[in-house]
Length: 317
Image 1 (cartoon, rainbow, N blue to C red):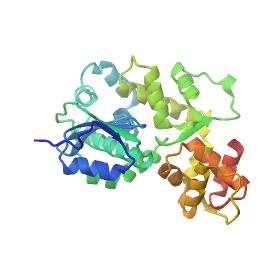
Image 2: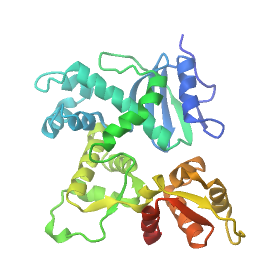
Image 3: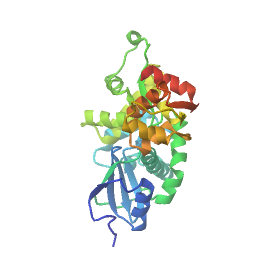
Image 4: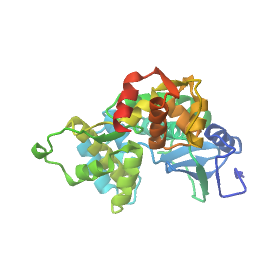
């Protein structure tokens, strides 16, 4: 009999970390689904193994990026999908995706979801009473493998056009009058505010287009963002620099510094990135960017690595 991971249906991560949480689900051979917020990642478990993931990169996007499908073929498959799984449709005529290629993509989808949870630490979780049954299109990924290989799966996305963690904004100078955009591209433009990661933009787009299947909505948002980048209408926002910006604190009297900034300052050790510190302290990227720039302007901290990234942050914050 499968065991439950916790007597309570939901909780937060005050006394938990995501690695230990997932390993515990594996240890108790958990069967069911868990929804993690605020990323809206949903993992499906069968006897302690992850057999499905939703909320990270869409399956279709992975297959197109790998050259298994064309965008036209994927659009056709989504159109005829109806109540069937996308995997079931893709393995049949006229798409004829090899089962091994599909399974590999599904396993990568799980690892990308885990990578997103490791980089954007969840705040709370909810155990769902979904009936989980494995079929020929279900990956079976051990939690330890997912944790070990999450970063390598993310590098595959980085080598592509856009990472799901990328924060994008409209370019300050672009020839808008000479470009004709589709309705989907305009919708994504409105969501790219230089504050949200692409994964959040995809979630917002999905809510705006409830008539579309989840896979289709997220894929369209991802594709529109790629097209906007290729048209040079959008660019990475300054907050991306937090991932490579490393600072150290200066021994100066602390005057006029609030509690959040004081915690952030104490964590500046010249080793951790500003992004890592923000994650540990559960700070929004915009809050972290504001704290970083104020600490630097008021001579509380100095740059150890990432001077160019800090200069961009100073322009925006």
